[in-house]
Length: 491
Image 1: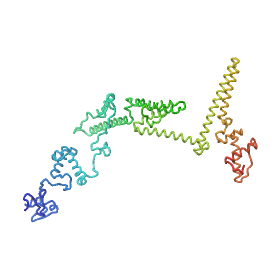
Image 2: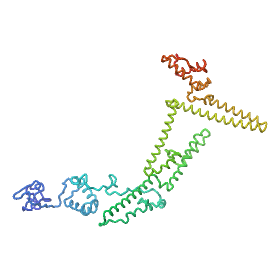
Image 3: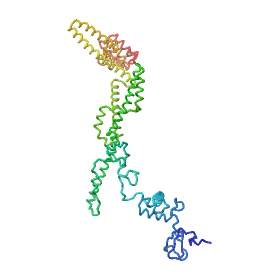
């Protein structure tokens, strides 16, 4: 026996207690949504007749698979609430829907079904025409972005906050940049009878105020980026003073290790100083030269256009460029001196260092000789002691000359033209033959040129200079043969 409290479709006999469509023209005609949508006709009922929806309020619009089990009455209350309170006021909307729904459930259901669901995809177009674009909002920002993103508060003490007039909760100062900027908009009001010129003038005032706010925030960002607040408070000086004892400890340790031959007690004292002074940074910063400091002061204006990291990278790249230019000049100097491999450059630098040392010793000897002679002549004028002074001075100079000759084996030819073009073996040869570098290079060029002409079958006459005797020629030919400049059959 059918339940008297239930309603059934007159066409398919399905249970339509929760939702049915009643014909307003035919009595006792109630259809289920499926038969009504198919256009079922029974007796005098026609599909174009008027109808009335009879809702029990307990069916779901999204089907039984929808989460939460929202009924049609709750859906109607949700749509009324979104129209009345606006998007985002989920607490008021939950109270309007009913006590059984929390604000979180209301938000998730509306976003899931009406925005990201099929209904939202069908009703909300991808590109909305005539839509106002918020140019102050960054990509992926919140729904209601502020004009400027607030920075984290400064890590300073209460006394320093009072000194700066800093308010950490607002990240503001009592005296801001362009303190009177708010006067531009403090007296503005929008009236319905404003003319177009007045409206544009008020918009210009607002735009000027926004620009001042951005400039104010930009200055705050620069102060944060370049650590200007700690510099103003003197914190950087305090940090440098704290680092000084650690630096001294490192220097003391290095000095004590270098002088370990004098005594072992210095090592222990230097190590104790380093250990007691605190931790030392393992990667110290590069020492800035005076020229770079002046250049930084001249280019300080770039700080307002560059971040601190970019500013430091700029000068670091300039330092690398100077090092590369110096290396290029050094390689070009090697090339001019005939050096084509890096292993030859080490020998060249060692020889150049010896040559400069000999020149320095020679200048010292010359100065000593001049001072000794003057001393001897002065004492000679004063009395008989002048002879002794002269002898002593002569002995001193002689000792220095002998010592200089021991250190500088090429003292006789090192100041002559072409000496820097000779190799070490050629310097020894010229020194032993008492031959100037220029004459040796001339003879060497002639011999090698004649050798090449003979190898090519070209008859060549000997054009050796007159100052070259048979002994010198034989010595030079033997040297060139052993060095590989000419072949043995030619010699």
